[in-house]
Amino acid sequence: MYRLSSYFMSRILADLPVQLVLPTVFVSFTYYMAGFKLTIVNFCHTLFIVLYSSFVSQGLGHAIGALVMKQKSALFLGATLMLSFLLTSGFYIQNVPGFMAWIRYISVGHHTYKLLLGSQYKA
Figure: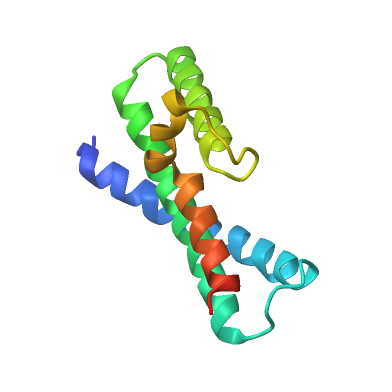
């Protein structure tokens, strides 16, 4: 009954409150528990990074869903990509083998990790 663009935009707008509230509550609790810098600028910077990462990850999920029409194949591709991104981002492994090092530059986690480090430890 509706055009695809109107359905897609309404779905994104309907998901927006949940996607904004849950990461905000998470950061509000864990920021102080982790012992980060207690300034409002650093807190807002960290919150912005986490929210932005959430939006980018949701967009990646939508792109995978649009590319692969079979649900099992999309789940397999999404899990494989996210695991590859997680392992090569630099959070768990510092010395990534050379043949896999290029993956970190397209990884959401790598850029999020670097931004979060910069928000707390820049001079």
